[in-house]
Structure formats: C-alpha cells, structure tokens
Image (cartoon, rainbow, N blue to C red; front, side, top):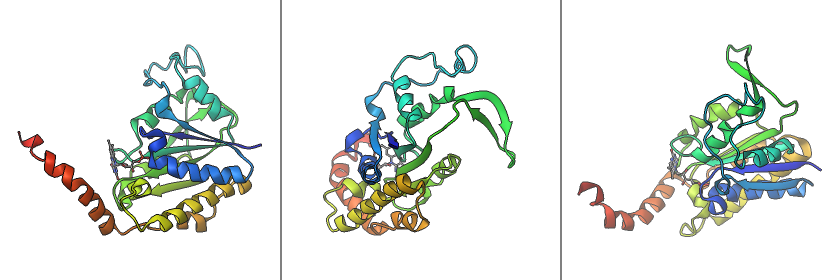
Length: 241
Ligand SMILES: Cc1cc2nc3c(=O)[nH]c(=O)nc-3n(C[C@H](O)[C@H](O)[C@H](O)COP(=O)(O)O)c2cc1C
C-alpha cells in the first residue's frame, strides 16, 4: 500500500487554511488506496539547525540534536509521496516549515556537484526519495505572493504544486456565497490526490482547474477590509502614541 504524508507548516495547525486543502488531497489519495497522514509540525519539537555540519562530518547522516526530527524523518523515508503545506509568510514559507527543511541536511552528502545548467547541488544520502508535492496559500489576492516560493519549489520536481491565493476565504464564514466555488476547488484537490496515487501524476487540466479564481480581488479586499475596520478603528492610535 502506498503511503502519503503531508507536513503542515502552519502555526494554526488543524485550524489552518492549509489543513483544509491537505485534507482534500489526502481524501483523494485515500480513495486511491493510500495510507495517509497529516503531520502538524507546530505540535512537534523541532529545534533550529545549529549549522555545525556534524551530520556530514562527525556523525554522517545523523543530527546531533535530539528532538522530534528522528521520528518525523522516519515518516518522510517511509512515504511514497510527501507533501509540504505552508501559508505564505513574508513571501516565503513559515519559519516552522523552514526549520524542518533545514533539519533535513543529514539526508544529503557534503560533496558539491554541478548541474548541466551551471547550478550546484549536494547528492542525497538515501537511495529512494519520496515524490513530493507542495500546497501554499496566501492571504493576499493575486499571484505575485508566490513569486519567491515558486522557484524554490520548482527545484523539488513535484508531482503537483498548489498556489491558492485569497487563502483566508477557505475558512471565513462571513464571506457567504462562495461555498460552492470552494467546494469545487476542494473537489478538484481530491481528484489531484487520487490521480497522484493512482497514476503518479496530475494532469495539466486539473492543475489549471485548481488555480481558477475563487473570488475577484476587489470583493476579497472589500471583505477583508470591512472585517478589519472595527478592530482597526479601535486600535489605530496605538502606533501614534
Ligand atoms: C507573519 C505573517 C506573514 C504573512 N505574510 C504574507 C505575505 O507575504 N503574503 C501574503 O499573501 N500573505 C501573508 N500572510 C497571510 C497568510 O498567508 C494567510 O493568512 C494564510 O491564509 C494563512 O494560512 P494558514 O491558515 O494555512 O496558516 C502572512 C501572515 C502572517 C501571520
């Protein structure tokens, strides 16, 4: 049986918009017969990488920090497909997910190799890496919020990538009238999860459908700004005092 694991890097954990999307992908994966698991990184102890390179020199393949990483990497190794989910924070991934990714350094070897395109890489220490997928969502409308993350994710050679703008719409009950579009979006994610496990790929048609707009930029902005207005008018003098 194929195993699919998603590492969710949102500090909101089970309350996150990321989780809503991950849940849908995993439901599809489960339908295709996979064993699925979503790991909320915020619930785990993951220290910062110390940058000591002991995992390359003194204890090859092993980090000297003893926290939850060993257990989390077990899930990584034993999966056929691994997903990473993150909200956009400062145009990039969250610090929680970045700490997790940094702590994967023991999985690579120290030697530097050159790609044909002139870039460089460290070869993996393990023989079989899982296939990956990526699920990002932004609080802003528009697609420029993903401009910095996309080139990085592009290097992972993912089965599929999701860049959901207007992400707060997924969990905002105030914005009525969008539920059917949200349901269509989540249903498409289910199909993507199912296709990934059943066929090892996701069609461009599904990818395009995943990225259809859920709401116009103006409506999303108006909704967000209306919701913020009350709390802002109560607190606007805070920074001026
Ligand atoms: C510290 C911080 C930084 C953020 N930076 C951005 C940003 O650069 N661009 C953006 O579109 N949204 C940004 N957001 C908004 C989140 O991406 C948005 O709220 C998202 O829907 C949260 O997803 P989650 O529920 O999965 O955590 C930021 C939020 C926080 C708390």
